[in-house]
Amino acid sequence: MQKISRRLMLAGSLAGGLAATMARPSFAADAPVWKKLPTVPYKGKQDDISFVNAMTGWYGNGEGKLYRTIDAGESWTKIWDQPGTFIRALGFLDDKVGYLGNVGTDYYPGVTDKNPLYKTIDGGVTWAAITAPGIEKVAGICGIDILPVKRIYQGEMRTSHIVTAAGRVGGNAMMLRSEDDGNSWKVIDLTAYAGMILDVEFHDAKTGFVCASGLSDTGEGDALILMTNDAGKSWKPVWRSNRKMENAWKMNWPSRKVGYATVQSYDEAAGNKRVIVKTMDGGKSWKELPLVDEAGIREFGIGFTDEKRGWVGTTKGGFETADGGKSWKRIEFGKAVNKIRLIPKSGGGKAVYAIGVDLHRLDLA
Image (cartoon, rainbow, N blue to C red; front, side):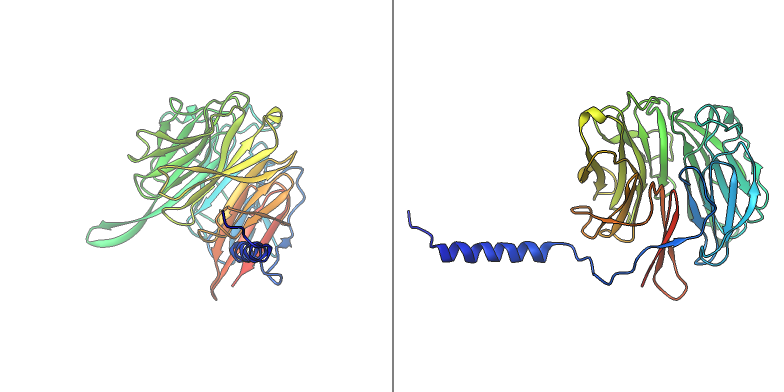
């Protein structure tokens, strides 16, 4: 066999190193940084934030306090305060109409409010509890999805909204759904498919997904993503972890085909490897991608500005990818970020909000 000279080997090594370097994601040294925004101190993580334009938004906490900004988060005003309510999820259609999900009783201490979902028509100053046949079965809400749909009404094209609210952590797995802008609601029971629901998103009137766990007891359940093609009448598992003490926590879809979800693990004996999951075929199949191998890490929120660039919040801070989850670097945008929202700015670009223990904003061109 012909010998390969040391020079050729070195050349091959250099070429391989150059190719590997060229293949690495680009994180510019002068990239914009996350700005910490003022919020009222809270003992735990804050779970959700919602914006309807570049300036107007809301966030809430587990003490039943709701805050509104009209200057892109630079300042906040408390507009609603209802002790005993745990504000877990928020979703606004415009600067007047919005929905608030309460995690419900018998899970977190101090929560006495049994109403799972509220609606406002005055920008969050007042709220009315949603009513529906069988709503007493809905213990609480962890995620709200608002889907605008175009419909012809008396010869005119109008935009209405399908609103879906699902929950909850610790069970049971239930869903509230309105197909007429929140005027009427129906309860959808998913207990035959999952033990608890942590997040929900619909791509169209019929196609939707939930992040879930197989059982209501996190100590026994495996992480699970369910898909429906008939507006929630039936569901099928499209991914499950096959490991105990896990759940699929939050999801984000930068496109109709590409989606991501975080996976929470509570099994310390199983090691410290943490993964996210990704789909590239519209949710039909999912693949696990490594995030980090480190003790004490637990994943929360996830958000992507396109199919490649995105962020994950954890107990120890944030992680960013520029190559679709193949590699990650640490970033500083606070601990336990539970929700990441991307808002188009009027002059172009996007504002990315990350809320958890604190609130941060990243301004992208």
